[in-house]
Image (tube, rainbow, N blue to C red; front, side):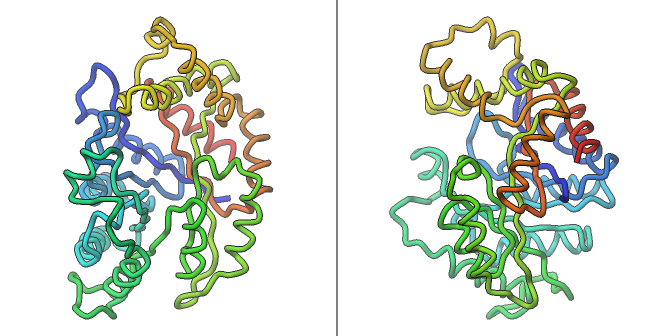
Length: 321
């Protein structure tokens, strides 16, 4: 199984947002040194807990500080952009860092109504996602109605971030699929991926590819790993309480905070679902997931407040897989 990272440039309480971006670049350098296959970055707009809203800009910085690891977007939210502009951005990246760029695509239109208004998007807009996928592919392959520049002699690989119906879209368009979130725990996921492989329509020789994306935290023992997973679980629970996804907080501060009963239930449930533990514990969980999904690649989207501990988790995961 190939092994990759998704870094969402998580902000930390008490630190400027810019520190999260530099930490992402440093993590990419570390991932390359460890031998990871790729590192992807995210697109989230006006979210206090995430500093990265422009994957293409951040990838340019990462590409300048690395030399071998593949880098890409996890993902560009296509409904928020014109296909030609996305193609131009990623063709520029590929020209600067030849053969190392991936274009992961999603379909989110914004976290909250104010953000959607600021992005000039809305849930009531016509769904043209599949048409936009085809248009974008045409620009990347040089078959569009206009020629995106810089013209390239190879197409930037496209991947589709998907849950549920999106897996079917990936099959129709002959795209590799990245599956994450609650759908990975569902009883239907083996059948959904079986249908994806069965119904896959190759495009220019493409073959089915399944990447599973989830938080994976590895530490010397289960208790330590569970503590490292706590800041993300706490942030998720608080976002459901307040409607705002917050920066990561230190474990000690979370332990000292007031825990409403509903927040406690959500945090404990999240930690119970998390793939967090010693190398032996994590290996068992990943073996089950690999068997259920037949995944070709694991993309760990892990984050925690302690950046050194995060790099340590990346090292232990690399040793494990």
